[in-house]
Image (tube, rainbow, N blue to C red; front, side):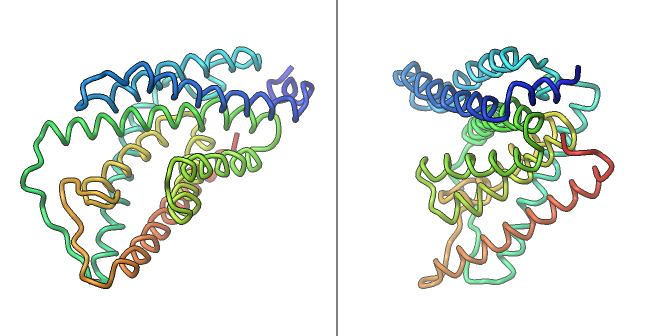
Amino acid sequence: MTIKGTNKKKGRYYTLARVILFFACTLVVYILSSILTENAPERMAKQLLMLSATILTFFLVLLFTRWEKLKPNDVGIVPGKKSAPRFSIGFGIGLLIAIMQVMIALSFGHFRLNLVPEITIAEIALTLLLFILAGFREELVFRSYFLRSLGYSLTPFLALVIMTTIFSLEHLVSGNTWQNAIIGAGTGAILFGLAALKTKGLALPLGLHIAFNFGNWAFGFKGRPGIWEVIVEKGYDSYVNNIGMGAYIFVMGLAIAGVCIVYRREKLS
């Protein structure tokens, strides 16, 4: 009996309810991790929080995967021969589209990038580590059991829609603006979700996710200085923000099209 058939017999609503329960448990795990690391040294507090949350989330994925009578490989958490090259390719493309976004935005003028002289190698390394851990956690939460289980039970397209909606809402509740949560996080969720479904693993979306977020931070596009700082001409804040968002949609659209073209023979599953 196929996995897909087994899931359908259990009922689509039952699987959806279980996925929602899984997501709720990941939030509990995150809160628990924040409590466990609240007394950690300030310099490493966020990294330790994400490390704790990532480890606990991984065990949640295993638990719910077993409950669903799936195997770890069915939800993409088992590395394979192609995992390392796919992660490397994803990381390279993630950095490339982050650079492209900045170059496009700069071409419209009214802001510049200033190198932050006081930033240290240690600060850059700790920030990269934070994005690695945060990327691992989000991919485990949204693109492993959550996405793949719904894909088997419903359809991959509906699974992608549901995952993107929840991903965007989580970013909205976390304090992001409507624009950043719906357009920003939502577009990213489509890219990462497609990459996970097409490659049936997390290596490619993880590389894309980590590199793009790190590149955004490095260029000061995360709302705070990174390796560079964004200096906007007076009175052009809204203009620059809109140009940046437009450039983001463009490069993400290119990346989504690239995944669809390169993996056009691979079915969403």
